[in-house]
Image (tube, rainbow, N blue to C red; front, side, top):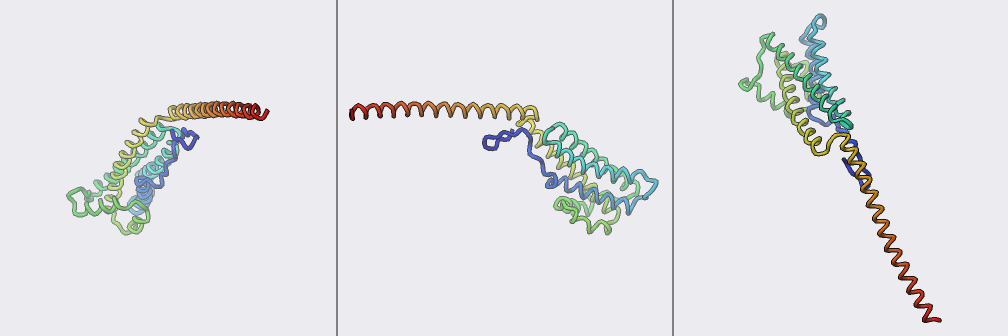
Length: 222
């Protein structure tokens, strides 16, 4: 429950998903996949094209929807973030299948270009950083970049979900937050009433004191 002055709020703050690094990387993955499919896969008669593009889009969109629904439902947010991770894992498998079926090199820790690719993908999140390479990279370069991004997105989302889990444990879900907000409001009302009652008692005492002083002055004058 969030308290602002004397106001109590049970809705969680809206997550600005545009600022989440893993979301930014899913935007890159979606655009990269569209270009990859156009350049290296058959436009018709290959279901892989639709599947890859849909998986990339689903990963991105489920993060958006989960962040929006998280205002009221931790369970829905968690479910949609899990769906996003599932889509990204599916996309990674499609890229790995392409690498394997086309006899391309998978850039693992022993590959000469592995470290540079890891550093580039780790340090760059925005589509503008990748677009200049979309028409220049070979299918091997593009597929390995996509696999790297998929792995990073999954790792970052695991960390993010762990944080959300801790928030739920400490703050509760919507029902707990609503109850806390209502109790907080009632407690605030009770404290205000007690403060007014104390103030009235002080004023009554002061009035009684003034009346006594006034009576004393009149007796002296009379």
